Image (cartoon, rainbow, N blue to C red; front, side, top):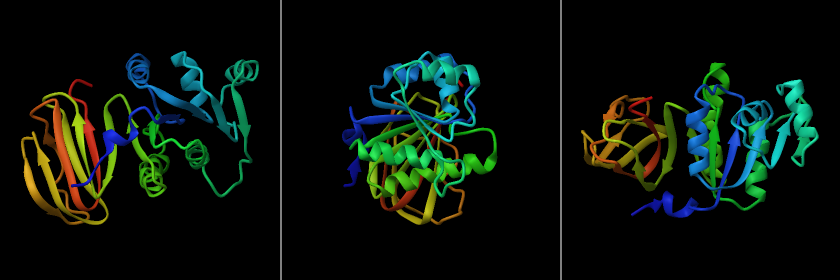
Length: 227
């Protein structure tokens, strides 16, 4: 039996808001209000999104080249802690934010505005999930249309709606012993080779689906039915 991620991160989660695309601010505001975050970090241009969401971050960090001038002035006059870093550096602003969460001792990281825009940024942000997992924390990406999780030798109960589409994608090599329950294609001890697309477009048959990977690492991507 693997680790049940939902039991680990409950009440110990940080929120990072990046500079990717956000369109449905009302939906994102509801999701953020539903979750209880110990720490909210605006990663550079993510400060623009949080301003429009009406949510005050604890920190703004980055080289600050993507924040609108009027929004930057607003935050500079507030109690928000602003940490400015050089534009030329080895780490991305998102990595620096991950380090801050790690220093705070939190175990979960929800990442918003990680998708859309430049494809290199989008792929790097998805890869960041493995970087976070490798540092002993449990991340997910949340957008208006999908949620992305990463599992390594672990299990989870995936909350959603009947009809939500769920895809399982191996990363870092083959994934063995995958079990899926409460899905249209429920399986036990399925082995998936890296780069094979068999895990795409399963469907949730209940509001609570079970996923376990015995040996290996997978992305779990839930596409939200009505978005």
